[in-house]
Amino acid sequence: MIEIGIFQILICGFGVVMGIIFGALPGMTSTMAVAIFLPLTYAYDMGTALYLLLGLYVGGISGGLIPAILINIPGTPSSITTCFDGYPMAKRGEGEKALKIGIVSSLFGGIFSLIVLWLFTPVLASIAIKFSAVEKFLLIVFALTVIAALSKGNMLRGIFAGCLGVMFALVGVFTDNNMVRMVPGPLTVTLRNGFSLLPVIIGLFAVSQILEEAETGMKKAKYDVSGETGGKFSLSVFKGQTINLIRSAGIGTFMGILPGVGGSAASILAYSQAKNFSKQPEKFGTGSEEGLISSESSNNGLTGGA
Image (cartoon, rainbow, N blue to C red; front, side):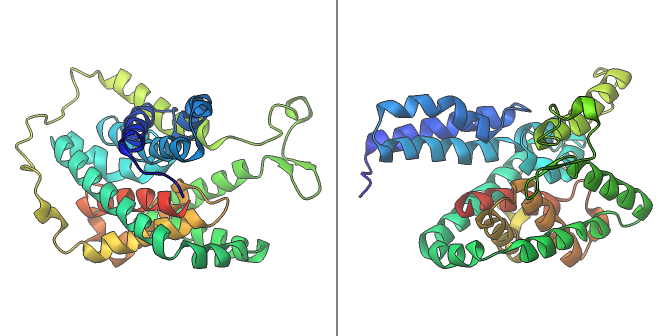
């Protein structure tokens, strides 16, 4: 039986704080936080070490919303869809409101996944283990259909981006027969494991955002920082969002249980479903509170399942 005491709670809180800091730094993910702090666990027993590592993991996932909302750069891959609506809200002067919506949504997703972890994980895990290559293939095909939901009005661009993503994903060595795919001879060793997700995301989001800011200039950027346009945060924002919260957290939890499926897939899938069921789908991508809620509740729902 793992002991629960004041010290364990404090060490878990320390892990959450450090995880949030790592998650808020683009490129420093929760996985990296766990790897860096792993040597510290050698001085503790198994229970205390788990408190620290789980705190780091959960905090790292949550911290990714900070740069995603404020500077349009996802701190972690799980926060990609947070950029879609969080950053437009920040440009309208609603950055603080967006952060608070994201934090509350993250809290709900984390608690939801904790309840599932406590009650249903043994049953769900037994189902997830039975997923064969066929089920994973169908899941990936289903995930690709998300492109249609997110590309409404720009279908050609969406299809091009999807094909480009598939092409980059095929680079590397096929594990079943060790055959090298789509890698030129001189780069075989360098790209043996393909393109890592994190550098690709940072390159796509961070570099383009930095260049845009450099061209415009921070002083000339026409951002409304007064906060007068959107009002203050209130829990009334979540009125009518109960189904969205539960659905998104449920998707995140289930995707977390499946081996090899990351938080980015969970948040994108939940975001697309929220858009499909929304009464105002045209607002998604322009600063929709509904989209922000679905993104953050799903990526934190991932933690319990994972």
